[in-house]
Length: 255
Image 1 (spheres, rainbow, N blue to C red):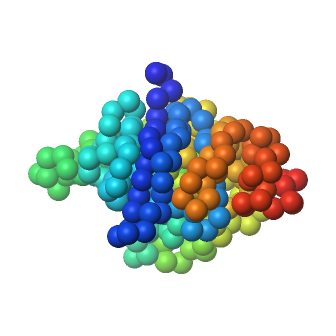
Image 2 (cartoon, helix red, strand yellow):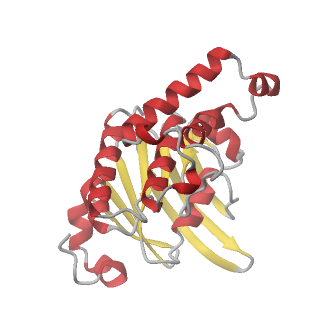
């Protein structure tokens, strides 16, 4: 299918004898923002780890762009076009903003010819820098390219991390609580960036506790609770669901 992106099928994740995720299935197509929400401890990050190749599921499968990638390494999935961010910004404080963003483009080269990677010819370096510049422009941070990461606020660090994953040119982005640390105005701008990115083709799967952001940008939302998928639907359906209100949203759902 033209919109084939990420698909999770009957996924089971266990830590020792404890089952964290049981028989969870959902999909995140390209060209749209999808949401994965639920209380703390519901298993959202475990699913991200299984999708990105950092965790081997006990059962079930992960499919990316129509291919079963359950046994494919994290680096190989990145080269195929699957990118992600983490709950805590994974940045290099001693590097500049621009250099951190360039790492997103460079990760697509991991596992290729090591001599090419180490040599980094002029053409390749120019391409990496152009990808970083485009991503920084998209996120509105071109003016801080030479600034060291260690001096930035949490909100700015979040934007740098988003720019870095955009620089990778991935077809599916897994964003784990990306708006944490942003104020209301920054969150609104962040949501606009996500919609612009998705409108150009990539798919985004968003784990997020800011329900205002989730309801404003997601086309489809999957809801987890205690490792089970308890509901799926569009934002209006999720807000109207008694099951979701009981498990997560509470009665204050007028977002």
